[in-house]
Image 1 (tube, one colour):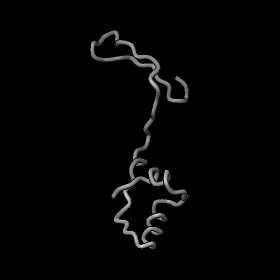
Image 2 (cartoon, one colour; image 1 turned 180 degrees about the vertical axis):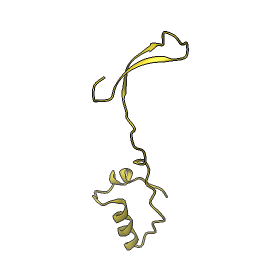
Image 3 (cartoon, rainbow, N blue to C red; image 1 turned 135 degrees about the vertical axis):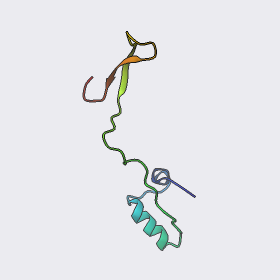
Image 4 (cartoon, rainbow, N blue to C red; image 1 turned 90 degrees about the vertical axis):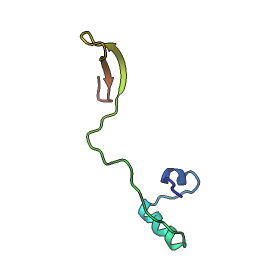
Length: 73
């Protein structure tokens, strides 16, 4: 069964890393087949809020957007 750390933390209060949790579960006799880390593999990704979207003056299938990335527009 695959579970996320966030899901497990909803039911159990712990502050261990994924590796430490796996070690503790193994010591209790529960089998941990593996740990899969997702996310955090990308650099330079910026999440922004789209403030406005207007039609591009010279193209039918393009838009001109004004965005806010938290650093200003």
